[in-house]
Length: 108
Image (cartoon, rainbow, N blue to C red; front, side, top):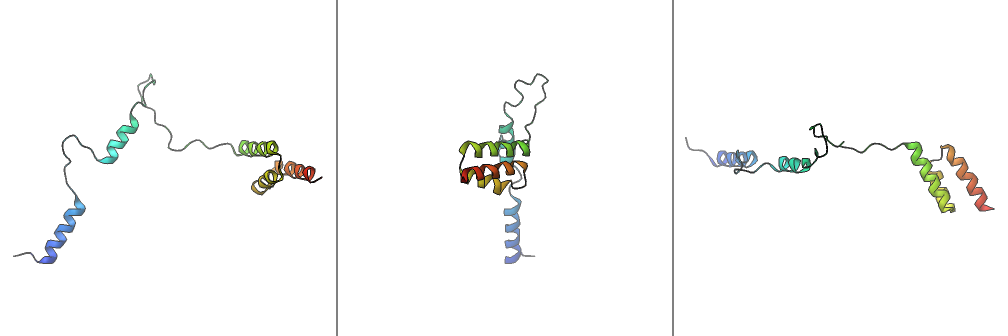
């Protein structure tokens, strides 16, 4: 039985999506090569011999410390805009009352 044009086209599309079974000698798929490159030198300085992996996300910051830092930045600037921005971002924080007091002092 002779294959029709539809069958030949379907086989060609499947061959394209399937890709090659084998890679040339010594080559690795792109993601494996990248993963191996990222691991280079991670276990240096680790006496136990176990390679430690870095966390995928940085540790979360303490929200209270961040608010305090932003308030201190607003105080250092000492401008109306800085205090208004702090109040807009952290209106329900106890430091927002202090920022409102600072705004009152600036308007005098």
